[in-house]
Figure 1 (tube, one colour):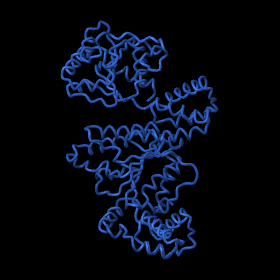
Figure 2 (figure 1 turned 90 degrees about the horizontal axis):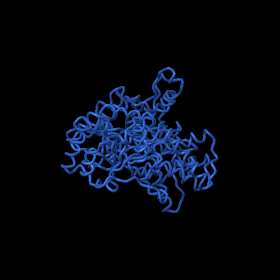
Figure 3 (figure 1 turned 120 degrees about the horizontal axis):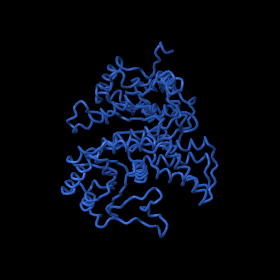
Length: 520
């Protein structure tokens, strides 16, 4: 949503007599710009309130006084007397002859007082037939039931490309004037840099741009990598997603997956202008189910790298919160961030831990059912180029509705590697650890690792190398075979579960390793 679109949406809410508008955000600067633009066009007064400053009249974009970095001598507007107290402020609003839009910062915490709630209700009743409104902001705004039916939540999405571009130009200009930092960027370089800023708040974007420029005293195309590194840190600290930027160089090595690789080559065409010209929507995503340690996670990383797209990882531990309502907000925040950073690959790791139990939502207060419903609606209606790769180890915990044809573009099943794939996997991990495969009896190792997953094969190589270092000798077949014999693979320890999974997958899902004859 562009800035102008947001302004229009806010004006529509005001004109349609919504007395309480809630914005869950910490970006007060963007809230101010939005309210200022909306009220100026509507020729309405804008007032601001905080517990420290009280109620005051906003004087326009060129008179920002709530700025701790303002030059000495700058004039703050006079606050209305005795309005720092929430109740007295509301009483003052009731008596004011000039009405307008009242921005109440971090006000939700004061709604634990029933007298304040009662007074808010009286003010909203007074506003319900006018364009006046209370705008409440904060990181989390939870309203009591008495107020919730009068309120509407305004979704202030993360800054779009136009806002980020404007912010970059302002920061670059300031750095050039104050710090004499040259800007050695062409128009295309600036567009690439702005895209790298997507998913950040304006404040975070300013900090990242300034950091990249001050490291080497200039802004160049090389700073995109610095921005991506800082961006990964910023997003990780947000606690919802993990950001993995595209890695230049050689592609990840993943043995097998021939059928999946073939499908991805065809699916990538869906993101082209030619596909859009034919009114073909881009592919929504895939679900990869199968045995632990058989490369599902590696496949998600490889897809992003081969498509040269950033990878956003979301797992259950980053969503669930002990406070009521916070888990849903975390999930929605993750989806919103993914959309703001499109195009990308969104990896839902162990999706069964996120959506399990939605068919029996009473066990968790209906949380799983609500997450499941939100996810399905988003998958069906999403317009941004966000390709979902969901991975699952236990399909028996997944809601049956998720496995219905059409939810994902395709559902792939990953089985234990066959002899040819085990040979490839062995060679990959030997080479990765500076061991020449030709020095080993690979056919004997392939036969000995029958029933092993890719992760188990990797661990065999690692454990055998540690043993070789301990013995102060070179790694050989004897040490590898000995480590293989000591390992009990999942195909033995969980034989019944794997056989049940195979029986279901054989009839319902597409093999990740086989290319259907119709696609050859």
